[in-house]
Image 1 (cartoon, one colour):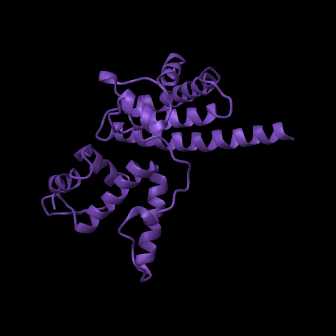
Image 2 (cartoon, helix red, strand yellow; image 1 turned 90 degrees about the vertical axis):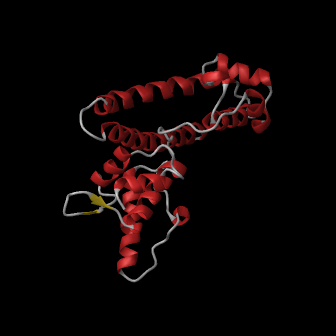
Image 3 (cartoon, one colour; image 1 turned 45 degrees about the horizontal axis):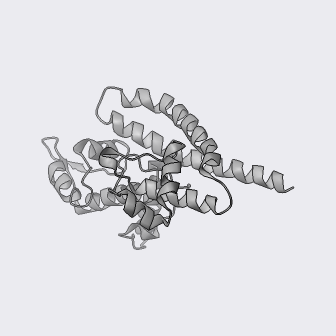
Length: 227
């Protein structure tokens, strides 16, 4: 298949995928299509399967390419030794804490649905908005990330933490985002094909490491408080 044909196949499941993204994944060594004598890429069904594996891992598990590459290497090694390579991502392992999928913010959740799905009332939503922890997008709709945020805030509220207490988390997150932006920003603005894809991949990996680091720091601090 040509790269255009591959794009048409993948877009049925991944509407946001682009030719630039496929070329970026090739440059990163995740897929190695053959080349026709004319120089055009020729993708096999196996290449398509690997691309689907990578895109699913990024979309559903928010894994950085480093981890995905390790999983693909293990699959290739199993296949070379006579084992069966899994066709689905369900058997893949996650070696890092999940980060945020920065490529897209799925879902359109209105305020009533947000309350219904999280079990909170309207004043609780308003309080989160007032304290800068939650914000609606165009048209007043929220997304799936907002649902998870409200669920976490509601669970913490059951322990006695009000939304005003959670502002410390927001301040910390803003500072971390600023540090990541200082590194990824110049890469995203760079010249050449795949600059934005490289920046998004860097952000995904740094976010995953940031979540892991934050978790370990909180655990250590809480352990110290208990002692």
